[in-house]
Length: 323
Image (cartoon, rainbow, N blue to C red; front, side, top):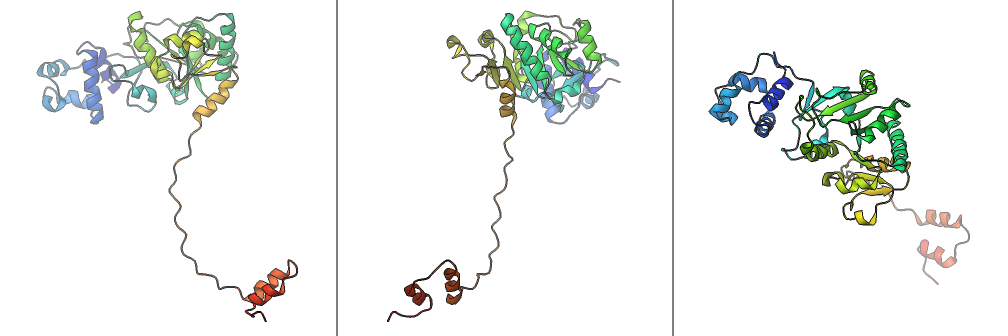
């Protein structure tokens, strides 16, 4: 018996329907609380309520008895990165295929976008990676990028964990011995939104880059060159280590810059500090009984403790008129 996730994989990538049509149907059925198992059991009936054409109903009527698919996270499940929910449906992955410890997605994701690094930038990237791996967060990079190599090297010196994004299918990637060792140790998670058997295709890179930035809670740049290709949705939560060049000011209008990698911790703390929860206005205090007025003699004794009281004031307090 196929699991719900396997049925999603078959519907999306089994060649029965165009992917965008399958995603639109999944979005509708998911919003209605319907599972694919229930829907397929109703076919070929009730096609009007399911918004299927007769041809689509016949195509989907008999899914394969067994359909092998790697583990995947569906877009409505709790660990699915919340930032991806903000993407338009065309870009938002219905499934995230993965290898490794899926529970790592419960930690904030800090993305180090891919870019060539000179010697100085390499040193900065190593310091940044070391700082992030020591925190309770999940630094992320693109598989086979220079940033991924830095992360993996720094992981050998710490107990930190990290995430690698793939721009190919989860079953077509070849992992290094170090990556395999970290996977086995539960310290690495690898994810891909592409069909499991997909080969790399540069034509998809821009869309996949948008997914990577949206999946991350924050992004850190270690070279100004990354500003030129920074997606719009990544600019509000992005930090550049160093100064923003004058010619890049317009592209980086909402990117923050810091002089030192050690400033990252302050930036993260400022970005992740939760605002206090709104509280209801305090209830008015119940009316209290008015206290009886003090007797003039008591007021006079209190004043006399602080020193001599003029005769005129004494007379007024005691109700005596001036003679």
